[in-house]
Picture 1: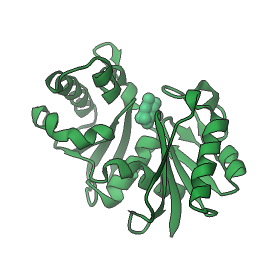
Picture 2 (picture 1 turned 180 degrees about the vertical axis):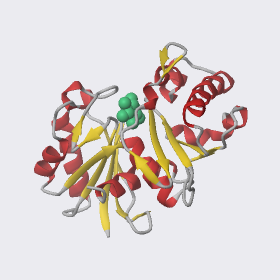
Picture 3 (picture 1 turned 90 degrees about the horizontal axis):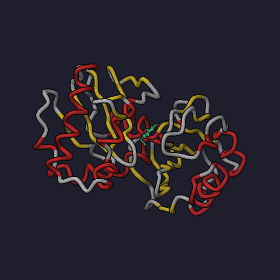
Picture 4 (picture 1 turned 90 degrees about the vertical axis):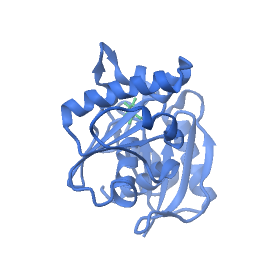
Length: 244
Ligand code: BGC
């Protein structure tokens, strides 16, 4: 089965048709800059543009950086407040004339890694952590997702974790890899003490540079890099549409 997977991020919106049985992209992905202010209607227009570029009229799965229930974003940390309360599934389906299903972006990346990547066959508790503009989390036990966890907003040392340990924080504060690894370690250690997972999988753009910070981590739990790298968001968004 083929589903168009679309990953909505703070800077870019990326999409490609996905074979959901194999996790393969069926065409080269298309990336379009996220419209300024990131409001629902302009983003829906980009989704339409991506669908049209692939002559798409089948189902579409969309990963989005907010907790999502029944197609509605429940909270807006790094996106326009206008999303909260908007039925995005209905809006996108109307604009594209395709059946659209939205899912949290970290849940999407986690589903992709659990199905085709670093978490495949892992029976215990696996926590996917995406490091980007924010910190996204997806928690799995025996392969089952507990959706919409928002542990990027866990308070660590009196601050929202993503404010100190996201990749955006590293860039904003121009942190050395050593300093950043210390912050990431602090965050992972807080998560470790709450969940005692069997594995952490690190995703997001920063996963490409894992040799710069993974060796500096000192927590007990094994930490690996996402295997699908920047395709996880697209593949997982497509998988999300199967869960409707
Ligand atoms: C949002 C999450 C999202 C994460 C990664 C956080 O700020 O609250 O829903 O998964 O960023 O994009």
